Amino acid sequence: EVQLVESGGGLVQPGRSLKLSCLASGFTFSNYGMNWIRQAPGKGLEWVASISSSSSYIYYADTVKGRFTISRDNAKNTLYLQMTSLRSEDTALYYCARQGGVWDYYFDYWGQGVMVTVSS
Amino acid sequence: DIVMTQTPSSQAVSAGEKVTMSCKSSQSLLYSENKKNYLAWYQQKPGQSPKLLISWASTRESGVPDRFIGSGSGTDFTLTISSVQAEDLAVYYCEQYYDTPFTFGSGTKLEIK
Image 1 (cartoon, chains in turn orange, red):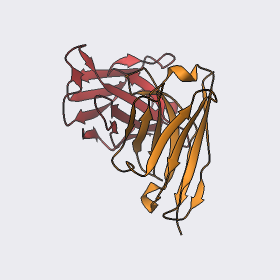
Image 2 (cartoon, one colour):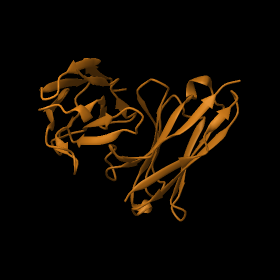
Image 3 (cartoon, helix red, strand yellow):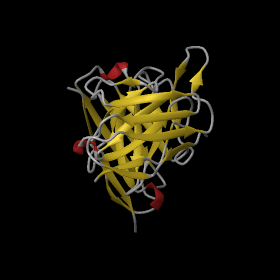
Image 4 (tube, helix red, strand yellow):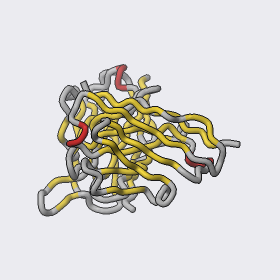
């Protein structure tokens, strides 16, 4: 059974940093591209970042480019999102999601999400 | 960026009724080389993570009931639920994965009368 379990969220002040993790199990993690997608409270879905299976291809939404860094450790089956210079508008539930295919950026499995609240 | 527009924003139907919801993209999602539409549909039930229902505009995921039908091509897409069940109460999102940034529609909230 595919499982994605996010961790690392919490309350953080504006301008500070936070690092999210997503532990994957139930599939061969190193074969799949992975993504972070967020959902502000009561709002819709926003794709944040994507990383290919070997980390060769990385993409970001303009809203986080230069502030967030996606990475992965295939030996640990773990996806990361390093978030810096956090803003109030980054407050959201952050989901880790698996891509459906190498170049197919639909998301076939999602974690339960981890909440990030940016507030003073 | 490709803008995804979903209508209606919400609708209420009775169990057993047929419901359709629309998703329009600001540019074509049909890739000429493989004739595929890069469009997915997700269902998000209250308090849950989104669940993939349909990819490639019309390919139902394994385990998704056949009452969920995706159709359309180019810029106009539709999700049809042929006979709504109480458990279909959810927000439905479309997503384009034709190009970065990958973008979602604002969702259609389905309520059961």
